[in-house]
View 1: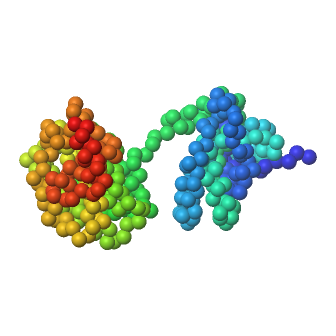
View 2 (view 1 turned 180 degrees about the vertical axis):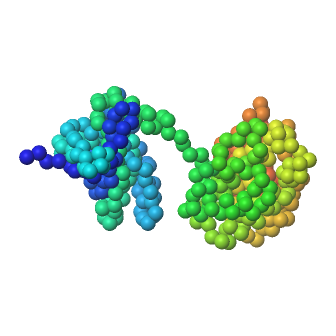
View 3 (view 1 turned 90 degrees about the vertical axis):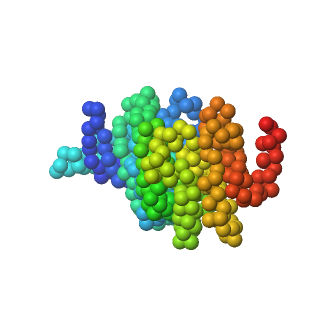
Length: 354
């Protein structure tokens, strides 16, 4: 007698080939898909090697969002005997697979590994299901091509759009609320793209402000008090950068701002985030008294004081965390905010390099 797996399934056709979609209990994943063989060379595998660093992150996503986690389908090839037994409707039936057959994941190995890890901590997940798209295995070359096609042609979601749609991330939610509450940011922040074209109607991306807020708060939590702080900080910044107000009043073009000033650069927004952290850590400081002085700073790219902090000597923009720290330190000195011991040491090293 031949023993089989029997999956309720729906049959479809792609590129003239049959495929089958079935809902599979999570507890079966370990049985269906063998552990990756570490010693196999990449040219003899149909998948990339698992990145172990990603597994705990995805596992925690499942466990922390037990009532709302969601996964897209896994894709797998069946190397062995199987048949589709239709019911009354030809495309709905049972996929009967020989237990000696081998199942190979074409897409979703990290999801599968994370689910297995989550099951070790929460057995109540066992009978929940994930959809699997099964294809007939047509050899290694075909499986490798499937992996390439599934990953090469996938469109990655922008960080800004992911932030916009994320309702679990408290800083993301706070960032959206802050942007919407400040007219300047509401008008000039692109909530969908991560990279702005030279003729974009926006000056910033949602992800730029989000990352700056992460620097301010230094953690995933964001209380109502934190939201109020962020709103106050960014309102003061926006109202005290003269060039931003000129753009808002349409006395300075966005193109001129981008080409001639550093206040629309990601590094400057990041430096403002680091600056905000100073006020967040020391609530005794009067933000308004210090941030008022932003009006007096010369933000021109041609200003030599920004060289090797925000921009290189050739005018190219810097992106490193060291550059962010140096830019922030200069802003602090310009507005009369004392430097920390570490910042003083870095300033000394920076000056000695000149």
